[in-house]
Length: 402
Image (cartoon, rainbow, N blue to C red; front, side, top):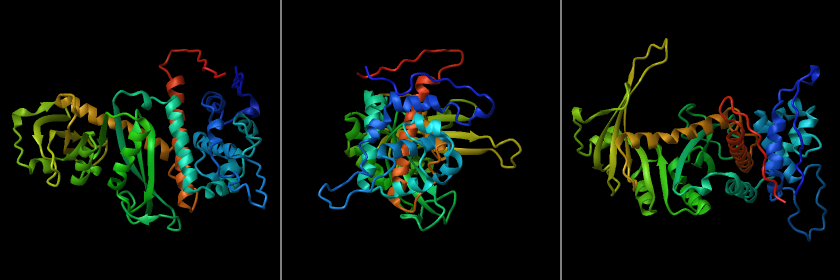
């Protein structure tokens, strides 16, 4: 049996030994000994010699690829928002570095230079590592029915000097340069992603993401659960031609414009704020040659306490072509199950600091997001194993491969 990197973990606080990263040893043990991330990161070849026939000897570096990758990944978990803060916050944390297999944390300039050496091939290596981790530790690969949630997020950038930083679809900060980050999820685990320039619409990468998920998970039965931003006749026709089942939102007035008549007596009340009506098969957009089963939703929104705004009434539709029959309320609940992926984006831009693009180079930023995605997936598995209900104590022993 192989020996664990960390035998015992004792966390105590005495006098000057108090550390803001007190619980990180448990996470480091999980990353190094259970997930064995260092073994996976040996596949990255950023610092490795490409051509063995070169006369010039490769520069000897203090940190290997696995050192740099696991160190950059740890920054997201430690809550360090920028690589420039490494020297300030981690220069004295030598014990934390040793838990990750590092002699000490690298400098901020070394972190920037390493990311800037990433090419498209190296980014694909990180994506392959994420896929291997999903196959070993994730839940997405063992699902009989694959439910894919795809969503996008706009990353506003601080400078137009960054590659691909152009003014585009940036609703929150109009006129600011940005990136568009598109991610496909299965069981709340990030399976595939694409980083594009700010003027790239999310619909342009949707089919590419779904095809990649299908190839990675090798499951013929797949349901695509999307929001209204992906709605177009071309997209719907392509999804149906791919043999995918769809659950998606659409505009209320578009459905009504197709000649659908709504009777007041047909509404079904879900709660005090929400009511539904099942209008049956109906076209949802004139440029699509297929019709879908449509459920219309009417939802009231109560303003925040002290707000001067009045109560708003939102109306939208949910359409589907699922192979299994659901009631109107079950369709409503099934569609809104995709809102759990919003937590991924909140954590990525908050604690994991994925919104702080560290480099002027596009591939470096793409690699940074790949590492942040791996970190979030690892922490998702960590929470499933350790964060149980209150009052429950477990003794968790990982299986050690001989």
